[in-house]
Length: 349
Image (cartoon, rainbow, N blue to C red; front, side, top):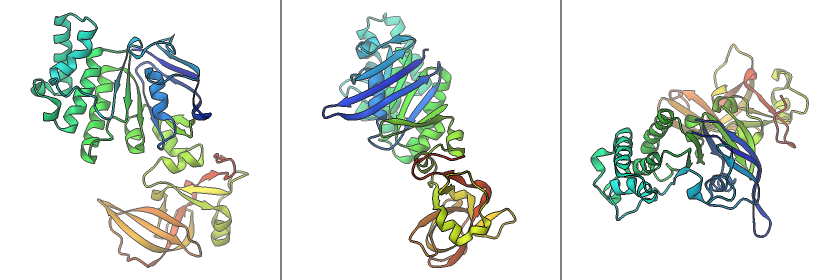
């Protein structure tokens, strides 16, 4: 196992296009850190710099205390799992698992032992003599992970490994990857654009935006106390609702609690807004039901605020007895307001 340390890491392409803008990040021994953010935020570029697949414009990348900026990928003692599996189609599963070890001159008894152990852990022993084309997407992804496991590297790097799978398989493979990482205890850096995947997998979550780190911490911390408007809007499904303070003061000024200085916009999670009278302090806002989405045991209500073009989403249990066009009163929990300043984009308290 090992640590991964990034200090002042930058990547600039021709034309002074900055993809990564001064990243400082330390991944602890045995930790699973997930980089998440929208397309183009720099997360995959950052991972590829750690892997040695992209040159580093400035800063240093260290693995297990050793600066690896000038080392080739094969010299960094890492294993990477890609979204497209990157399996050799003409080789059997067994041959795919053995390939890297044979190239390194690993003795045959060691190869056989590691392949058997990886096949046991990933439950792919019945498929060892099959070709990749004879496997499902989930089975191929297990083989790709097996190829990384047999290497026994210092660190695993995952580049959106589940993006090619359907929703059900993604859920199953999330569980498999988390179980595997905990079993092996290997330091891991994982990239995804799927915030649900990020929230469920990460020991520590790093939200990136425009080549920078917006916020890093435990997933529950980022959900409960987002440091910026960007993080607040990105983390959470359905996403957080935002309300302009001028609108709130006009419509329900007397019920707004005291907020930190500089607050001109507040965020409220969909599950912190109800449509029924409550005994808890709440901010009432008149709204019209635009759409009701049944989602299993709950429903997402899309409401248009009275006197505004703004749509908000609330999350309620079951299926409410409402129809499109119905007038309702949205009750914003006064204790669940997230205060922000629009100009800075940062949390005010």
